[in-house]
Length: 332
Image 1 (cartoon, rainbow, N blue to C red):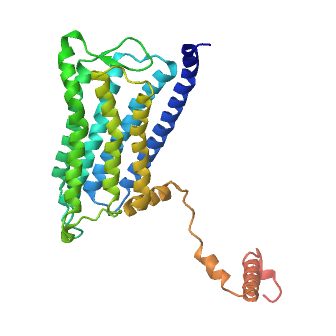
Image 2: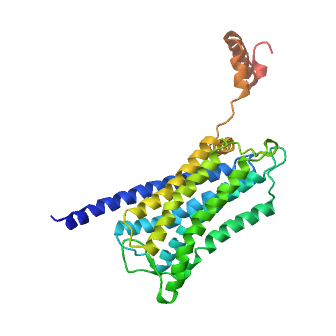
């Protein structure tokens, strides 16, 4: 057996291992983000802007795990894309837009922390401000990769969804491919770093209280940007250089999914408000038991001989009351 035959024979088990690993990460991320969303919905006392921004991050991870991942894993398992060009372009669009929404969302989290005047002064952002921030985050995240949805076409059938530029838009998409990675990866990371730096340098009198360790949110933001960096670099490599090794694409996807699985676990473990919301969710899901009878508790406090005395008296009284002809009893 030559080397090419050995590589062909070893490729399906490697592809199956990648599919299984990505499926496990996607399932863990989807379950964790759904649980985190339910806990945030019941986290009484948590600041509303922070809850909304963390829910936005969970929504991006759920879109990746539930909409982008299944058709791509099916294509890898079948070694061909059979879902059509529209789904290919849509998943490629979301696969670029959701990490961008997470990067900009972390920048918004840092801005909310920096704008919070303190525990007694609220969180600085009203509903209109929060809605404008979320609209800007998702608007930029969905509009910036829109050329992938409009101009790219599905490449010849292969083991994955690969897009190529039509002749009429080849020059535009090449320029877009050069400008997109800095805009999608470096700019959100710089904004988030500046926002968290301003939050950490805030005076003690106006320092925010996110009810978690101070370094947790900056560390999770750094993890998000580090996980998205290989994805952006691989996209730039595909547009400018020779085809990258096939093993790099599952690795880049795994890093994106790993970030989505670790963030809910970290927040549920370290945030007091998230733990409180999780307990409320578990309490609502548990079957309700009937409260104990207070008369039984009072009866347990009575000595046994007194209980027997009153039990006999009640039986005697019941027997007298149930006599159908009480006038025929002796003595009446």
